[in-house]
Structures are given as C-alpha cells and as structure tokens.
Amino acid sequence: MPLDGGSEPPASQYEAGSADVSMNQSRYCDPRLEELKIGYWSDVQITDEAAARLISLYLETDHPILGVFDADLFVTDLINNRPRYCSRLLVASVLSWSSVSRVQSLK
Image (cartoon, rainbow, N blue to C red; front, side, top):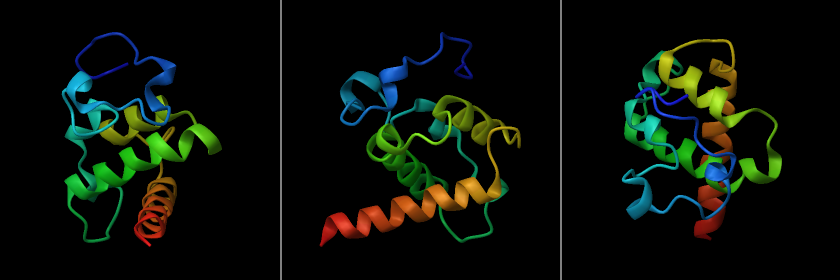
C-alpha cells in the first residue's frame, strides 16, 4: 500500500511503457521512490535520485519479463527500510542489472 494511505497500485503499474509522467505526476514508475534513501541499503556512492531512476527503469522494463519478486512488496520495504521483501543483495542486484541494461541500450 502506498505510504499516503491510498489504495494499492494496480498490477499493471510495472508493465513496460505504463509510467507516463504526466499521469503519475512522478519521475518514477512508483511515486514512493521519491522517498528513497539508498544509503540504508547500499554503501555504493550513488545519489537517491540516480538509484530511484535505476530501480524505476528495472521495474518498468525488466521486471514485467523476469518478475522474480513482488515489486510492490519490494518497493514498500525498500522505502520503509524493512528487510522482509527487500535486502542489500536484492537492491545491489537490481541496481547492477539496471545499470548494465542502461549501458547496453546506449550502444
């Protein structure tokens, strides 16, 4: 459930091409990523904004295909610093995967 107490995001929220900034009023596929504090999850020197963009990129492009974890539970625990559905390893994996995907798309 989003932090603002609203309803659960629709399952299609993480489908490729569904993150229309004008509709979501957010730079990310999930507006909760605006509240990301990546320093809790990673010692890598990366800004919260860059990490949120990479996580959003993964959730929009690769997660609909791979889908090895529940994206809503992941984002909820990511933002709330809870280790039940989020871990340092999972965050590092998503950031790494997304970084490599981004570099590959620039070639």
